[in-house]
Amino acid sequence: MSKISIKQATELALEVGRILLQSGSATNRVEKMMQKVCEGFGYPNTDSFVTPTGIFISVKDKDENISTSIRRIESRRIDLGKITRISRLVNCIGEDKCTESHIVKDLNLSCAELKRIDAEQIWPGWLRNLCGGATSGFFCLLFGGAWMEFAVAVLIGIIVSSGLKYLGRLGFNNFLLNAIAAALIVFLAKLMDLYIPYIRLDNIIIGGIMLLVPGLSITNAMRDTMSGDLVSGTARAVEALFITVGIVAGSGSMLKIWALWGF
View 1 (cartoon, rainbow, N blue to C red):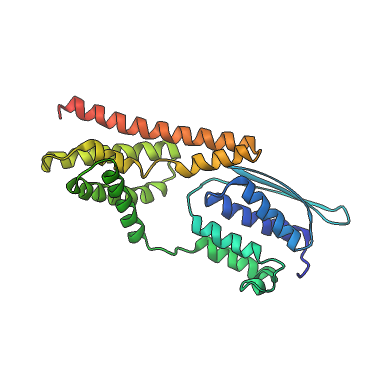
View 2: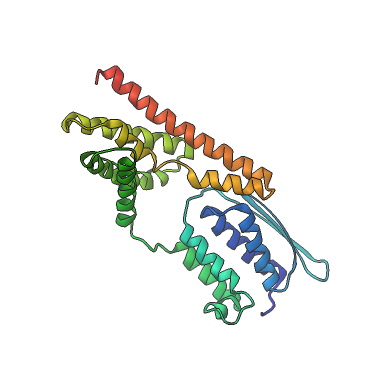
C-alpha cells in the first residue's frame, strides 16, 4: 500500500465514516471501517469517537505527529446498498485479489470512488415510490385488509413516498417530517373513504404508517448499546422515540380534525 500523509489518511477515513453514518450504519461499524482505512495506509494508531451527529478522529504516526479532525453530520437516511459498497471498498485495502484493489492503492482514485458511491442513485425515483406503495399495500393485507383496501393503501404509499422526498429537501427535522407524513396518510385515507364505500380505514392507515416506523433506528440503538456505545445507543433510541411521537401526533391530529368536521 502506498504511503500517504497523515492528514490525507485522516480526511479519507473521515469521508468514509461520513458516508457510512449518513447512510444509517451503526456507530461501531463506522469506527471499525475508519480504523481499517488508516491501518491500510500505514497509520495503526488511530482513535475515533462516533455519535449519530458527529465524527471525531485522531491519527498518530510513528514520529508522534497527531492529526485530529471533526465532521458534523446534519442529515441521515437509510441506504444499506451504499453501506455495502463502501464496506466492500474498505475491505479491499491490502488485499490484491479484490477487484477494487487498484482503486484503494491510489489516493486520488479512492477519493473519486467515494464521491461516485456517495452520489450514485442505483434505483430511479419512480421505482422507489412504487416500492413504498407496495410496502404500504402488503402491510395492509398483513393486518387483515381486503384487496380494495390494498389498492388504496398502495396509492397512498406512492403519494407519501414521493411527498417525503420533496419535504426532505425543505430541511424539515425528523419530528416535523414524520408528523406531516402521518397526517397526510390519514387525510388521504379519509378522503378515499368519501368516494369508495365499505373500506376499513384502520388497515389502510396502519399500512401507510408502517412506511414511517423507525425500525432500523431502533435496531441500531440496540446494537450500539449492546456493543458498549452508550452515548450513541441512547441518542438513537431518543431519536426513534421522537419519530414515533411525531407519527402519533400527526395521525392523531388529523383524525381529530376530521372528527371536528363531522366526518
